[in-house]
Image (cartoon, rainbow, N blue to C red; front, side, top):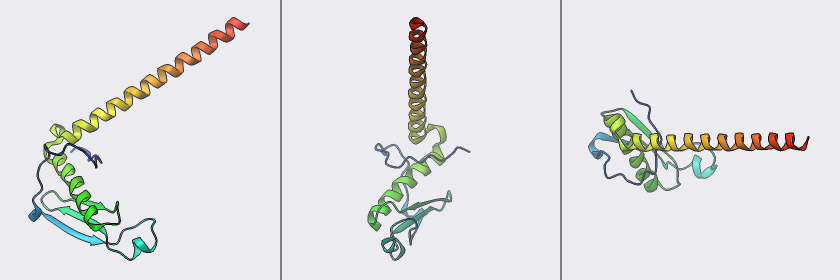
Amino acid sequence: RLPFFQAAGKKNSSNLLALNEAELKEQFVRGDGPGGQATNKTNNCVVLKHIPTGIVIKCHQTRSVEQNRKIAREILQEKVDLFYKGENSDVFKEKKAAERKKQEKKRRAKENLERKRHFKEMQQLEEK
């Protein structure tokens, strides 16, 4: 089983599997975390469950229920796509590409640091 990646805000969602509203169970609950009364007295946290797969998404990113519903559906769509397509999913490919890019950046930074350290050592030897 493949790990689920958090890839909310993915721009190109045309290749993702479509969600069927009949397969979704939606609830509105009180959110948690900071926010005081705005959080504790309003049910603007959306809990969305995809019944066939059992995937559950909890979205409380904004104070607006409508925006949270939209965001929750986007996240759920990506997770369902990843569940069914696995490594062929665009979400998986995008995550892997970002991971490779991050590793390459770390490698280059490490090489530059090593070059600087070597350069300083050479300067110190020349001064002696």
